[in-house]
Length: 355
Image (cartoon, rainbow, N blue to C red; front, side, top):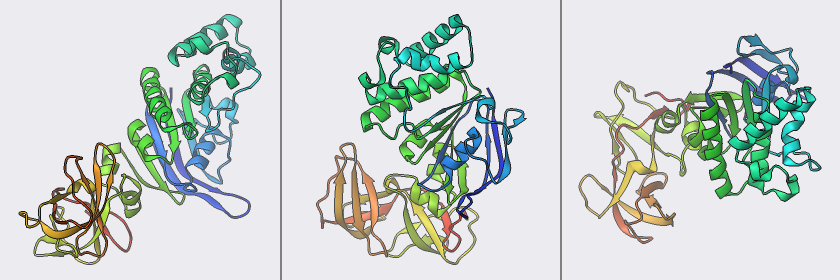
């Protein structure tokens, strides 16, 4: 096992396209680290540079105690799982798993032992004699994971491995991957654009935007206090409500009448934006204590919750998360109040967290 250090990574392609502007990462030994961001943010390029599939323009990559800048992929002691399973269609599951070990010239007994161990961990024993066309999408993905597992690498690199699965299979495979990583204790770097995968899997998450790291933190840290307006918009479903506010008389006041408690030490006026999660607002009966008048615009019933869009007289409607037992019709006049504690506050010109 080994940690990974990425220092001042930069990648520009010959046509001038900048894929990675500047990335610094410190990934701990045995950590499940997730790189999250939209398409084109540089997360896959960074992962491929770790693997040696892309040569960075500048910067250093260290795996364990070794700087691997000049090492080919085969000598980096990593295993990679791709979005597409890349299984050999003419080989049975057993032979797909054994292929990289046979290529290394390992003894037949050791190959058999490792294949059996990987099949047990990924629950593939009944499928060892099937070819890929006789496997479901989830089963093929488990074979791809097991094929990486048999090599016993220092580091697993995973590039959006669940994208092609349906929602139920993705949930099952997230559980499989998290359990596998915990059991093995191997360093794992996981790339995704899906925030649910990132929040449910990662010990820590790096949020990338335009080739730079916007924030690194635990799932709860990036959810509770996003480091920038980009992170605030990207993390959460629905995302944070972003309200333009003014600091007056010791309170943050938003258009429409909402009053929020400022963070300690804010001590500055100017153009500010407060981030309010949908669960930080509450819909109540008109005229309720501490509420302001509002009107329900629409409701999205999701079974375990209802997301209301509410017009509170501000510049933008807000989204409010409520339990399914609390129901209001569209156009209903209601009260809206803030129950979210101290919100994060951002500078509207820089987009950065100020308190």
